Image (cartoon, rainbow, N blue to C red; front, side, top):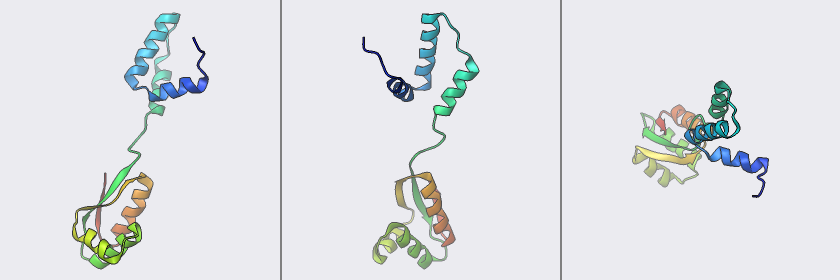
Length: 122
């Protein structure tokens, strides 16, 4: 049997679910006659789990009273022309940007809210 490198073992562990990791720990305990310290194992699994979504969508839900300012903000954010940006704003609710990082979504939300719009991040 080929020996696995540390990197291969770690990559394999990263792909496992919490239940699979739990089963692995039990199998190791039985095979080698040892006991894993529960708080240490739980803490390691909790650190590996992501805290939130890695990609989100910014949706314009209401344009508010300042439609022109919102259109300008949408143009700046998306790089669309005036007609396309106006069309996007007129179709409200509409997705402004999809599959972006949460940090970028917060920046976009701030720009749109400052322009008078209501925005939702999903």
